[in-house]
Length: 60
Image (cartoon, rainbow, N blue to C red):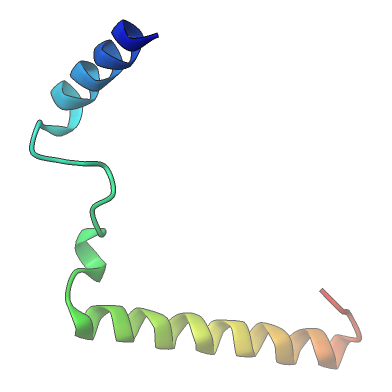
């Protein structure tokens, strides 16, 4: 089991680089302004979907 995880780790290091952990924040969300902008866009989209669903009578 340990040798299998080491092999997977080595393969991931080849693919992504040994300096990457795998839980890095995506490039477009690394700074505060871009995160806030994205959150506002998503919130607006969800609110529009909720409005559309309530006006069409669906409860999704």
